Length: 380
Image (cartoon, rainbow, N blue to C red; front, side, top):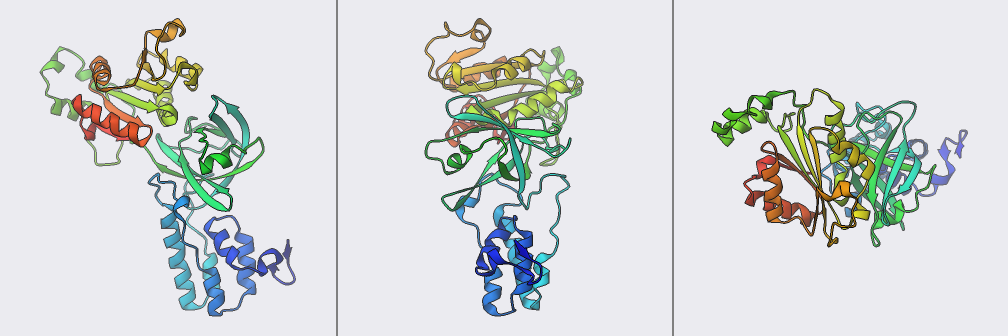
């Protein structure tokens, strides 16, 4: 509790170093302010307020901008300025705020778990509550970063919400928990009502609805058009990171790599003017381990959406429901099957890939053998 007469927080007065840790986690503004008011300007006091450099486990590896190391460098520079002027009030300067109303890329925000649904033996769908009818307003392909603490060690991981970016009042994430995973140990403790800390958003896939331009090429005259010209017309050329239109997207997803594909699919099917074709290839061990079957079946009913399943541990399709048998393969997605799928695409595809590092490397290699170069691929 805060002691307003003494002007500092009793719980932190004995160990000011905790405040530095707290500040780096962006969760204890009041305690930090109290200690700032109570402490003298001695060198030891300043060292106690110095931001703590993040440990490797605190970096999610998702290419966030800003990364937690960027946040640290910014806080360190702020500390150095304050120390040079011997003015601790400079340490409480207001940070730049994200344009997003409920998320901030620099600081963590707490969200309440509203439901937990177990999809398979090791994979869960978590729903989080947003205040009022607010929305994360994520762009397609953007991810957010989760913070957890296990045995005193802070860990951060990146996840892409599977709910539409404009979903009001909630967002959902799909998470696979691993036996020996540090973050998994924390996630498996979640229950309804728990508060979980996220920051972001980061990344994104530059996408623009296709409102008919590829139709110019979808005829007999297209046969005479070279691939370079086709690329120019069918996938408008922009500077890096600018939005593009695509004739067809080929999505290659392994397991929870399905997550970033879903908001893109839903964005396309929700827009009546978007004529982008999509071929989604989902790779799973068995039929029972395919996530979100009802949602995927609904998406597959749209005229411009096809979904294939590759089941690595199934040996026969006979026991599968008949509605799945036609578009399901057993075994692994290999080079020959990749060529077959690409040749079945209605237009030259731009490829999205999401899975483990080994999966991403294999897919990139198979695509190159099929004539798809790296500049026609996007890896999440």
